[in-house]
Image 1 (tube, rainbow, N blue to C red):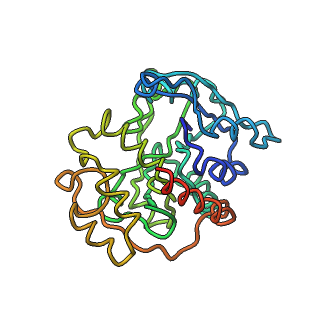
Image 2: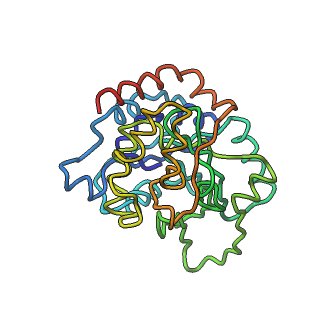
Image 3: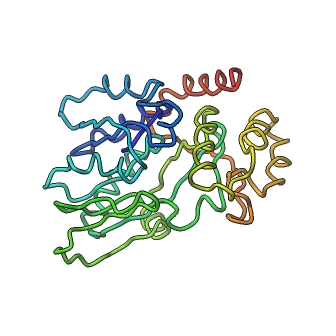
Length: 287
């Protein structure tokens, strides 16, 4: 995991994955964009959560620093990977999985032995009752699991790509997100557009460094805030303006409307959902 000011569901993320992980490697700190704005480390509860998370099996290793970009940040933790580790599960601090899906994934890796796996994302929007469809469900939007060997490094974070040592001849076997979902039903529960502060910071960085001209101008105030303030029956009219609510302009990503979620969230989210919803309300009131 790489994380910077990602305290939104970080505690819940660690709770879900801890029982299944052999190691949990975390690189905390800002990339240059945030360094230029005076940041040297997370100023929210990220460090508090990392420092105090129970680790009875000594699985967690935290690297702190400032990074040129996310490629460097990923490689900062990878140097601490144990030589006996077979697979790296790339996990953002706002990504969770059902425990049953983690167990199915472990069995799938043992049986199929891929070198990389794409995962379908159920990306939640504006809370816990709506998720993004269309573009957000495209094949391999999210590459998350990679076979690793001693000496493996990150070639790039975007898209996530592992580089193996030059003298190692590995036959590539990729399982795309649609194949994985159709075969196993596994999907990622992605709390990426849930909290107002989270969305505002994400879009500021993406607009400046990632999507740039492809991003809807003043997205936060033109799309996210009006959607959050609207009654449910009014939200479709807001979404129609840009064929959905993803920050990319529709000509670059197609439709991305919201849909109602009627399933169960991962256990760690369910048990804390009232407090998480209260945070959303506070952030909307204090924006």
